[in-house]
Image (cartoon, rainbow, N blue to C red; front, top):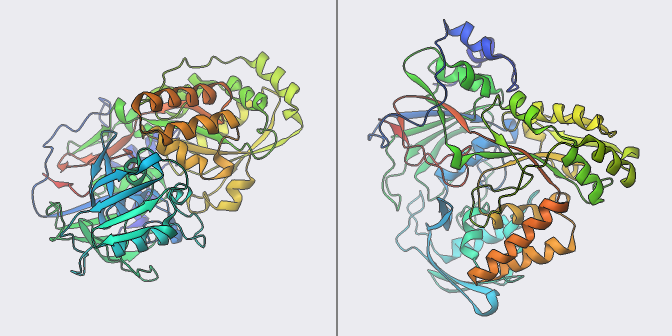
Length: 517
């Protein structure tokens, strides 16, 4: 069954998380008092069989079966079940997947990778080192709009294949824990010679593609030969929508069983009917909301201007207005709750000092553009509120609101002074490694670069912990990340939906063990 967009958008309210709460409830019947989001209250294990239908924010025509070619939430979710990585994350720790072991070479300048034997592609052919070599080169090709950040740390052109299940990969710089990088960076393995020009794709994942229409729907059937065992559901249908309220409506009108990343208004108002529950992923899976300041452009090449932004924002107003209280204030540091994270006080608003720093840095002469899209619930509303708060500090600033499919266009991101950004409690090496690999998002600071290099290059636990502490001290003092809040991750599900798994970020859950109980 294809999704009925007329039904969804006829009853849709405003897309922003700060408005439109009544539209859904009025369209679907009398609302019930909201008890607040809950952790899943039903069975945790899905029964075998059936069809699970889930809806996520899509990327429109830009969606792709290439697991490295598009970056919308529905692309991430689809890619996770069609393709596998060498390692995955579980509770912040590295878990073997297509690889079973890794041995770091002397000086952390290379590693030996051991692959899992007996893995099959969806067409029945064996998974081998030739596939991994091709996959590494495919993802790091300079012809890609966004080559994998892994290519900034490893020299895939010089890797060596020892045998069908062993490779040696040289590093461009010392990396003490390469398995962590392989687990958390976009690193899905694709088959040797694979291209993604049609409506199908061959992976090793728990599900295989039977139909795909960009911006609308993906239909996947269970791959019974998956190396980790059969997935519970016979079929997985992923629906793609760009309107947040329409995702909620898809569940309420019976066209989906699960909707990821729903408006906070839905959590506050509740949903009519005993078959539904608004779920929270819990404190440990909150998402950091904020912006990354572009230090390659004025005025944020000056640390005083970056400090002014941090002092000018009213975090409590953002929390109450955008998140409706579902979360806690942020302290400008990413990865809260992750290993090596250094807790720091939440900066207080100080408009007088912010105005002083704006004048001293000359930031009042700049025309500042902050790029945003409703990539995740609250991006646009928070950016619009930020603009008003920064104007109080004497900055000339406007929001550049675009559609989700065009949000990460490379040249536009590079031309913006700041970009809306979010991240879960992923390992520090992952988030700062991703930012460092793309200059407009990286902190241009010699002290931070040196501390980051020590943190990722050391194989010694104490040295690594000290280096991460140093890196975060610099980021807290003069960094380019502005984290105003740690937001709860809300979803809407039929109570029978079970097996939703969080690997690295709750907004993009793993559905390989999901189904109906």
